[in-house]
Image (cartoon, rainbow, N blue to C red; front, side, top):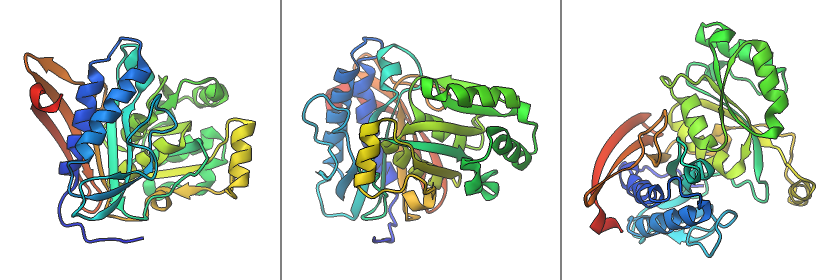
Length: 325
């Protein structure tokens, strides 16, 4: 792994790629065509990435969700070269099902870190996750992953100096979480359910002012690594471990020699302080506004994070559609 002194804020370049993906994806909102939206957004992001002065390699790509051939598959080179060697992780649409249904919260995301610094989950598709913000981070311990949910929520409440009943927990609304949701409710905490988009959920849980206190549950492994970049930049904390959801996935994980008992922190998912993260709203949500289309223009709302400095920037931009379509 190289831990290069990246003096330039590459997040200001990276956001061009999430803006391009968001503008392309927003055209498909509510049309019920999830795959077409994802393919268009991925193509737009790939074109924008190739304009960046970086020597990038996609660590976790789009091949497992794309319908056709994608330029953003794992191992693919991105960027025009002449710049730092970087690991790249991305998701042109986090919340693709919600976008297709015309719902809120979809975002386009991407992150960079020095080459060799990002953990690859290999054949693993799912991770169990716990995400908190910087207030709770010093109190978070690996035992939280095996403790009763009520115990973990009590620890978070103490760190935040509030009652458990005043906590809000982000959980994906999936059948696998029925028992977890029941435990949260019995503990007295509030639940925010979303059918999709756990990168956005992790961002909310890691942010100091979002109103979401913790993310719990099982979500995508690729999304977990991307989220770890944001959590690290926000000075929050994240715990994960492999959580195979089928016999086939369990066999692939076993064959790859991966340990399903090992608990990883965000510092192990991204082993560098030089991390850059960008997100652009596609559809309105609690984190970012969605794309607005005007006569010949599109308006975007984006978030840029820089790990080394802990800087968080919110950017509103106007794009001439003739230049990006």
